[in-house]
Image (cartoon, rainbow, N blue to C red; front, side):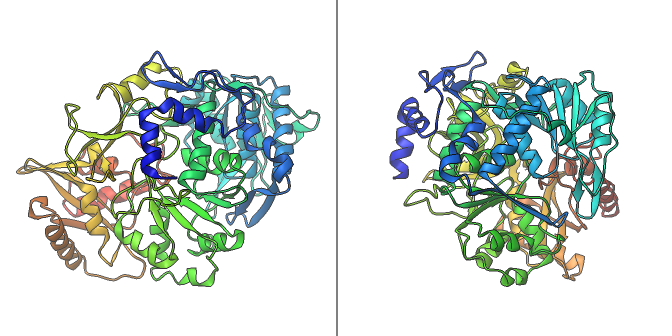
Length: 628
């Protein structure tokens, strides 16, 4: 299987290419229409096919691999483990689907899921899919007002939750958050089903609340309900520029074909392999590559509740790989930076047998060269950067590890476009730019299967957000360039470009330089206002554990490094050491908030922030350093 031939085939005749891929999944009724244009200007795949995503994840495997482990639940947060076979998971899901059906949940209804990383969360998702109900997973720990917004938008018939989540050694009570969200919301769900965890029991409202297991006692297992390829499988809310979250809608048909394609061709996984998506079901990675993708592909998936450090130490990831013989994993670079900060020499990895690991994928944020080199040297397997978004649901660029000759890595690049994605770089007027020239990264329509083509209840907003800025293209919102061989380089969100004396410079490029300093664990470079030059870059630096260095010496060294590697025009002259950087719960640094703090602009507390108190710390340190 050659990349050039496959890519060309997908470009020249997308319908024929993706019709062939659709034959690789089990439909109840094969689609007759492969591609259909929607009223909002995008495209829907396999609209008249009939299938069920839960059937593909569980039922189809019962005869061939019923006794194979489907989920390895590993919770260092609670010191508990479980191995759940495909047959056992099928029984749990069918019974819980029967419970939802008994409570009035039908095809097309919505259900909100607000749960930690426990097996019941996967059961909840799959049970909804089994009935043709649309689930919306809200990341556990979201504030009540954020959940209320989602409740009013999705209008769920039920809410599924747990009594608590675990954050290191803290118990976070979920039920009071759910109760407050319902009080704040206009829409009132009929029931809340609560999975009581032993470490913290929730108080129950007898008029509305049902115990997770007690309510299943008189239920009958439910069969899979056929749905159309164009019917929604889930809603996943992502941040919007207006502050109001956007409910990204994923369809059943395109999603199933895309995940099957990606699991085998992009990630190189085969039935029976052990896969670890080190994320959370609250994010798109958890939907695509913790639950649906690996189970549809007949793999054994790791369902992990914990953190890469302090549970109990920074060797947790290596222990999991060893214990379950993980063949491949996916993680955000921030997790590996956290591990490296605690264990700079990688000594803890030497305690474990990591020989089962074939390669490691990273995505979600920029992979800096120092983290790449540390991982590459430590693991001695390919460390593969790739790129995708919540909206796409599966990768846009990556080497095809399931093929005989995957594209070679190029440092700084997320590799080549995957077949089906015609990725281009355009200037502000929508004109194509030359190789190695930075611009707006866009994708020619139609996008391949699996990519979202609607926003829940707001089709016009989808058009306005993604299809209007550059007609004929999907606007990714990311900036970057392609080299002469078609490799894609992401320099960051288009608002991560600063203008220094008329020069447009990428803060991501400067971060690459700063993060290569041996004392630096991680960093963020932002533009701060300057009366003379408009903006100048400044660095916020987190040191590696145990490093002692004079701050003025560090600043001088970093200034010289940026001057040497980016140029004097960058005007990088300021770096301050901070204890930590503000991040989302999925590990992304909140650079936009850092810019607002530096500019003394008002900002809204991000709903996804991991720890609100850090913003006051950062503000004080910027004030002390005269950065504001």
